[in-house]
Image (tube, rainbow, N blue to C red; front, side, top):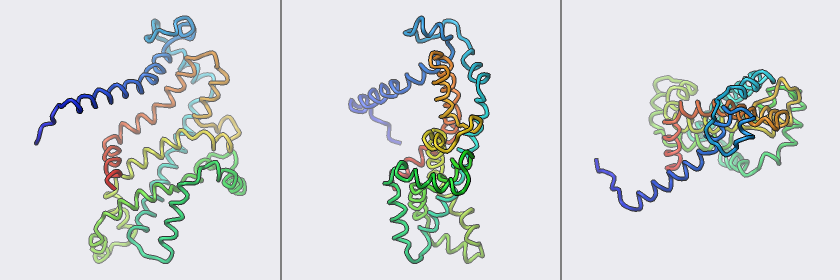
Length: 275
């Protein structure tokens, strides 16, 4: 195995990337350290990085002054359902577009790709009218249903499924396997890296979604964590430790998901670039 040569451009690249990573990490570290300070300490000595008297008062206020755990559960439930639904619909549609032939296939796929260029703000009102007709306003289903299908996910899965040999699928059919069995036993294991990357992107997008829940959810008990952060910003605008504590708690699930699927995520991104 050839050793990496530590030439000057490589060293400069490492230094630049390390400095950029450190700059990007500083706001998160500052947020974490501020959450362990009292509000008096933050206001009195705002330039100090480390807390002199660490306290959990901010976290206690977040949990006790608002139904934060309920909002946390709402976000976790809806994000998990959106992620599972998107992975299923994208992989199944990707399999169909990649390995089946039917009339209007190319036109339909172009239409799906064209929706990538339409911002959500354009379809927001029609989507709201449809959700209203379905009587889902002020229901958690309202923030799940519009996001169960992803045009980007369909495109990504189709690109990966096309790389699976057709002879392998034909062999499964000759052995008597039905299409759904082939989808579960052959297609899904082959596109796991792509699905891991898609799953992380989808979960992060659903977890951070602010605009659509703000429109369709009215009751406080049905809020999600992005709305909760605005709640703490408005009710504790001068209690910076409370706002920072809420931000840290909101960040934890995304961090856990990324750490669990980190290897598959990087592999998926690498293969996505190759595709």
